[in-house]
Length: 91
Image 1 (cartoon, helix red, strand yellow):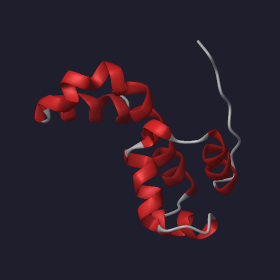
Image 2 (cartoon, one colour):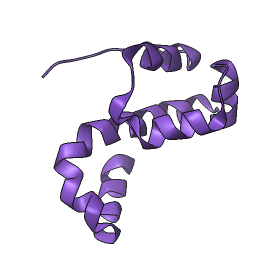
Image 3 (cartoon, rainbow, N blue to C red):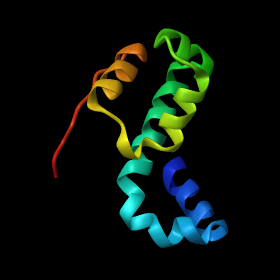
């Protein structure tokens, strides 16, 4: 089971609000998790990424935990700072 699926399963068990709104918020949640995983894969801390983006660690935490209204330009900046590129798919 992937880290994401494992996290979702555990969080649904302990947080009834999360479980109730899971379907509606899944895509926003997934973006935050994907950003965190990309950051961790590069070996950067939130603080180090914040320095690269000329922002605060709290901004990175907010993006990773509450990405429901993130701008595409911000996603592009984060991807670039991580040495990655942004791909968007409409399914």
